[in-house]
Picture 1 (cartoon, rainbow over the protein chains, first blue to last red):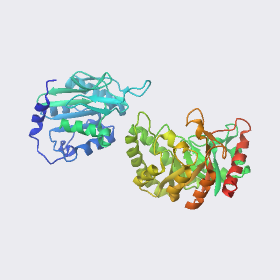
Picture 2: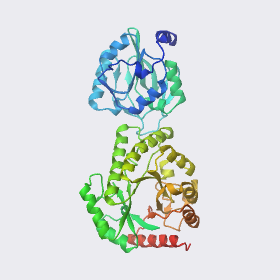
Picture 3: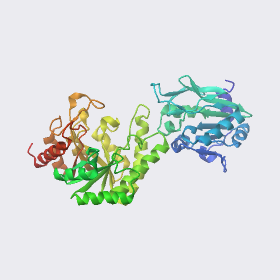
Length: 194
Length: 279
C-alpha cells in the first residue's frame, strides 16, 4: 500500500501529548454516528487512556454516518471507523453504507454471520500497520474498495483510504471488545497504529 | 431442611392446579417456579396473574421456594450482542419482581455461557458487570440471585475456587451460589463446593449423576437420587458443617417414562431419607 508506517508516524509526530483519545475528539462530535457497541467504546477508551492522539478520531462500534468525517480525514486526521452496523438498525446501516460509498468509495455488504453453519477459524487477520490476529466478533461487515488490510478467512473486512492529508481506516470486525479484554495482540496492533 | 420441586416437571395435561396438588400430596413443602418454561409463567404473565399463581400455591398449602428461569440459555448475560444482554437483564429483573410477589427471597440464574463463538475471556467480565448491576436491583428487592453451577453445560466456572473468585469479583452479598449437586460430574465433588461456599449458598438443587456415562447432551448422565455416583453421606455432612438448613429442590432431569407422578413420591421419599441421615 502507498501509506508507509514511517509516513504515517510522521503524520502523527506533531501531535501534542497528554490527552486521551476520547478527549481529543472535537467538542461537538459528529452527531450522525452513534455507538451500537458500548463495550467496544470502553475497550478503545481503556486501551488509549493516556495516549496522545489529537490527530486521531475513533468511532468504536459505529452505527450510522456523519458527513463531517470526510472533512476530518481531509484535514489530516486518522479516523478509525469501527463499524457496529451489525448491532444497529437497518436505517443506520443504510446511512453508513451510503456515507462510506460517497465519502471514500468504499462498499460494504450486509453483516456476515460468522458462526452459522460450518466452523471457521475465529480470527480477524490484520496486516497493517503490523500483523495481528484478533478474535472475530460474531458478525463482520465485508468491505470492498480501498486497500484491504484485514480479512476473516478470504473475506475482506478492513480497508484503508487516504484522502487529503489524512487516513480513513474501516474495521468491519469490531476489535474494541478485545482491547477491553486486554488481548495483548489487539493492544499491540493499536499501539503500532499510533 | 425443606423439600421443593420444580413446576417444569408437571406434565402438560396436568396443568398448574393438578401439579400443585400432586406436589403437596407427595409431601413437599414448596414449589420452584420456572419463568419461561411453562404456559402459566412467562414474561407476558402480568403481576395480577402472578398474584393468582401465589394464591393457588397458598391454597395448596405450599410456598414458593424460589424462582428459576429457562431463558438464560438463549439470552445469556454474557452475549456479545448488547441487545441480547439487555434482554437478559430484563428477564432477570422480572424474576426478581415476581419473586417479591410470590413471597420468596431467591432466584436462580445461569450466569455466563462460554461457547465456541463467545470465549471465556469475554464471558467473565461481561457476566461480572451484568451481575453487579442486577445486584443493585436485588438488594433493593431483598431477593438473592443464586448463580447455578451448570459447570459442563456452561463451560464456565468449573471449579469451586474459580466460582468463589467470581463471586468475590461480583462483590455483592445479594449474589451467591445456587448449588446443583448433580452438575459437578467428574470435575469435582459437591461436598467440597459446599464447604468452600457455605453461607453463599442460596438454594440447592438435588439430583444424582452417573459419571461413567459421559457428560451431557443427548445421552443423559442424570438419574434419580441414590442411583448415581454422588456421595450423599459426604454431601449431607458438608451441609451440616456449613450449617445449610435451607431448601433442597429436586431437579430431576431424567424423567420417568411411565407413571410420571410416581417420580414425585419417590424423590420426596429419597430427600426425606437424605435429611434424616439414614443413608
